[in-house]
Image 1 (spheres, one colour):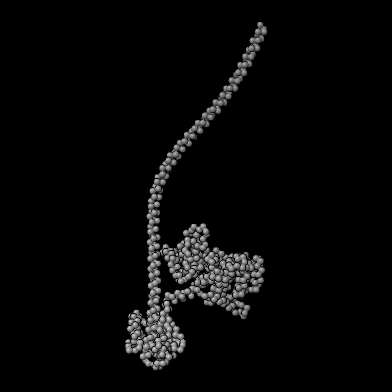
Image 2 (tube, rainbow, N blue to C red):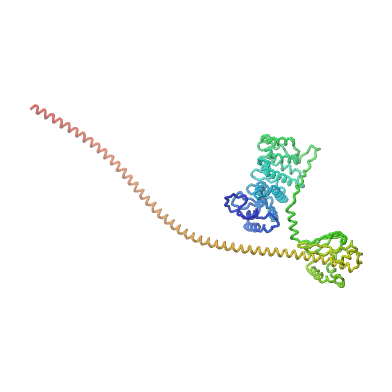
Length: 591
């Protein structure tokens, strides 16, 4: 889940969308806060987006509409608790809602966190722990976030969790996870004792757009019997069974209609008239006491890691004098951030470094005079830098093993440990073998200051060495980034030149095509004119053809008429000829 790819865990196999860089950078953030550099790419992308004028409280700009959520929602869905903590430090709003659906980060986390963690191979216990950490981070800034309904159905986070519970088909780990989520949400709602006492009543009896409460949803299936038992046990006096949904059904009616017999038996134990927090109870007219639900004993991983990081980044010099035969039981803690060393004891007196230096120089013949030069140079340097104050045990009037503690500094790695001095002469003093004297006390004080100063300087040197190492790594990282940026810039410049050349070629080609298009338009115009002329000729020919056809018809009729007349004439002639023949024959007979 920490590798930077071009897609998310929600993308399909054939996804070709170019997703928002903020989403991809957030998905590649490490899950370990110690890897602080893992947030560098996210910071860079966020800075670029803000420079472009992007509103950090709005949805991210992604090609896919279903990926357009606020960045805080993405951090919760992907389980990036350390990235979410950094976003809150950058003043991102935990109560940011989706501009289109009105969903909060808790809504999105309930829908998607389980699937994301299962995809990453995370166990159910770790998934719930991550949900609890994210929920605490969100509600620590705004607890009312859990009571915000989404805009489509008006469901709060409790409605959504109840819906996910009744979708389960059996006693699976997913069902157990959502039951844990609901109990965690209820604990966070009732954790703030400064809130009004009826906040649980408002949350459990809140009605969505169909007037359904959490109880209406859970009453549909027997699968929700465990979480309902929890609700009845913890909030039985705050559940209102008389609320009706948009179909005028109570939670009991829903359970009866759905055949959830176990739910029906459980709801009967609540009673017909629930005791509301805002009203009067049956116990003498007193108001119901606020419910007290202790949060789970889950270690706050964020605070623990923060404390470790502060210890690593802020070197502290501390030691503990153990009670023993030759040592004094004094607990000493030295914090040297601003140049001040503090030693807390039961009897203490302030001695300025200048006075101590004069006293050390005034006894140059003392056994501790060989340390004078190193102590003097160190103390002078500290005095030149700023106020260096020390608190050491008040010098007793008589020397005794119970009133003096001697320590020397031994460094091991990054930790400076003050251990009892094993010098033979001082050991004899501690055991009371040598009589007390002001010079011996001065040697003790000088030895103690040298040990403290040496430990402080070694601590500061180690801190500076770590800072120098970090600066060196940062410089190398910046150089590598600069080199990669230069290479990328060259590639972009080359790509830009190629695009310019291609654009010029496309412009020339476009001019040619425009010229050809004009020629084609002119040719088309000529063709249209020619077609118009041809159509006119065709019309004329059709008209002439019709006239010819009518003339032909008339002439054909005349022809037929003349043909009939001719036949009649032929018949008449034949009759006439036949009559003439008969007359001629008669004449011959008569003659």
